[in-house]
Amino acid sequence: MKEIDFLPEWYKEGKRRRVHMRRQYVALTVVFLTMLTYNLTAEHRIARASARIAQLEHRRVDAEEVMREFNRISRVLGEHKAKADAIRQTDSRIDPAAVLAELSYIVTDRVILSRVEFISEPVAPVDRKKPAASGSAVRAAGKPSTAGTQVPLGDVRFRIVLAGVAAKSEDVGTLVGRLGESPYFKKVVPSFSRTAKINVPLNDRREPTVGQTGQAKETFQVSEFEITCYLANYEEVNG
Image (spheres, rainbow, N blue to C red):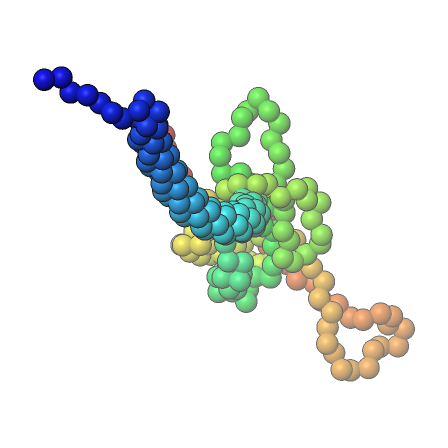
């Protein structure tokens, strides 16, 4: 038996159109919800990234401040290091007060020093092909020195020159021996020792003789000497 469809075509077409539109609405709703979710997720991530960037910006400012402080401290440290190197190069590493105290102990009352010189010399061996540079002399007593005033840099040794008079020549030998026995000095060598005469004013309270002019003086025979030695502030190592 044949079925007869009494529904008109326009009704069927409208029904199919409504079904198709519902599908489109569902698809659009799904797309809209997907886009909304994506936008919300993206906004959340952007907010987190912005907060992270703000933290990093704060850290960047702190890091720049730390770098500026580091550069300043490095510059100051470099200046202090340069000054320390200059001081270390010019430091003689000796105690002049202790050396003079040792000399005061060694020199007896039978010896009078008229000149004491401390002459700095480089410790390193000098090239014989080049002219030797004169060291700087520090004079503790006597006339001003005529040596150069340039202070040699680096490690130096000190040559000490003692000049004066002694009551007898034996006193000069005794002084040389005492200098050689002292741990402060080494390579003690007498430069010269010769007989000399000195005039000493007399402290006479008697009235001067009539016709006598000037102050009375007495002549003494002494031993004039000069001794050269080195301060034992270095050690020679062969090789």
